[in-house]
Length: 608
Image (cartoon, rainbow, N blue to C red; front, top):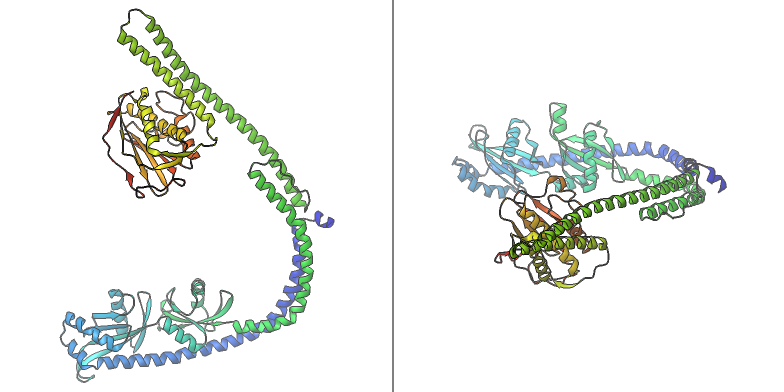
């Protein structure tokens, strides 16, 4: 163990890996590769040639059957009589009967010029243009039966002429085309006959195969190399097995490029038999493998003890640091790199602790400075107003209405100072435990509206309130009411700076999980420069009073209740703030989910 502590991690891992690799893997592979590869390659190549020949014999039988069926349908007198009408709609109405007789997957009738009149297909609906193109190509070929791709499906197609009278001298009435789809059923039949997996392809697309979906996806990624392989086939890997794949072109082509794009049959022969032979050989190396495994296990146990335990201690220290614990004790055991990493981690932890402390101190001083600057400015403003108005009131020449007006201004200044001190007090209390109770949301919101109407900032502001729900929620009434009050007060101040008559509206929307309190005003909107920082402390723009804590407090209160507050819309004519509170602890509610609670109570107008 002392020697292991002095070794580097790379050396510590290499020793057991080399022993196991050379002890088990090298000897096993040398024996198996020598005995198996030669036999497996020859056996699979022979089986693959036999599978291809089996398919070709089966295909000849299918082609002959399709030709006979097409000829029989073409000799039906009733079909010839139908074609003599030369009326497309009549032929279309009567053609379905002959399609049923043929039992084919694709049945088409063409006029004497080879133009498509009507076609019928089973399964998915085919594109008429694709069908016409396939029939046109088939008519141009000299082969009796051809294979074509129509809308990504393969069809084996036979076309027979419809002749009134003798075939050689009679009058041609048109053509009848019958086709069978080369689908999964055909693929299974070919697979059973050839004792191999098969796949029908066209271009770079698999039309039908006997492969499982996951193997088919892997096969597609290797299809290009299979199509370019030699006649002996190419070796590919699908899933946990190797296959020898040989392509067979189903549609003769004049060029190599056309041949690659033409329909193909890919026959895949598994190396399963070779794998079974490998298992037999493995019995010879089993004893040697067990011996190497025993030695390797002993080495790995000792090595893992020396490496993993210090690493686990280091991981524990990282998690403790993430949770703010700077006193977690790290182990000093392990390899040289691990001990060096532990010491580096300790140095980093000490530096982070020092940096965090400096950052907190700096942020605290900055916050105190911003707060002191804002408070001193507002307090001087209120005190100056009170002092000046008190001097004016002492003058004996003032009338009673003038004295009452000056007294009102003194009261406004006192109200402003009270709001300022209340905001500061509540700001210092955020984060403390809530005192929730079941409260009527309507009562909480109405109290907030009444408080705002008595505030000087609500003078000449028209406040409209939508009808409220009878829902009761599990909230801290005082804090939630303060949050709504702050948003309403800000809305009133903003509305008074707008171009038109100052208006503030408030509504309540419920869904299944939450309630949404929406407060809108027709003020000039929130400037873009502070939209991202408007909820931070001491951020304000164009306010009449306050120190920029209203929105900050409202957001913190909403978050303490498990919700949030968002600026959902701001324009030159309309600004909307939304307070979202979850209803997870609320009792059953009466309104349907997503329904906006009452829209239009008669508008109310308030003055301070």
